[in-house]
Length: 313
Image (tube, rainbow, N blue to C red; front, top):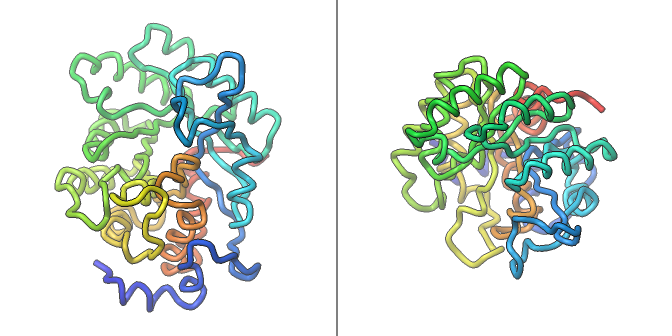
């Protein structure tokens, strides 16, 4: 396990320059390509509104690709894979319509319920669009015994259409992902938000550590290194900027998944609850930059191409 002092030494001068949350990046420090594989776009001003986020919250505002690029672009981010949080079926089409007009959107991860009687028909409908790359599910629902048969059939349907499965939830998520990946070896499973272990400064749950080991043992499982700052228990928006704070999580994931199965995601705009975008990306730039150019390139874009199988636009 890397300690903070060793980490800062091995990260090098370029990585050390990234530690400030708001300091602008010099042109020479920007990597060649960065794909943010976890953003959310929505528009509460449309006539039907949105089911998420709730009114009166900081997230309840119009959030579209240009808004994201204004925040992410200055940090070298060029494209995104968007994740749909809305349970409304037609919001899958909402994102596809956005992507049709904007080549910065490389892929869409939709939101469909495998237990729905319309699931197979909806998968067939959306999979006809090559920008539709998969769906995200909640790990807790996937683990319910009463959902086992429907989810088994649904995940087979996903694999048959060359779609992937994003999975999100609490610290039990990596273990649940491992179970599903073992049952469906032809399906790519992507654990969201580091598997949500919580605050890196607190003892990491044994359930999470065991789940990460089990998931990483399966070649069809990837993990998005995202939502680090949201796990911090402190003043909203002011999570630590020092990458060393997050080493217990980052080192565990690196040792488990290695260079080829970790993926960058910001979780913007939800990440604003933890820290500004600059902090979110600077943490992982410093960490993966310290692993070398090949590791950084793999993390920031190459692994996403392998996992999501997106096409250049």
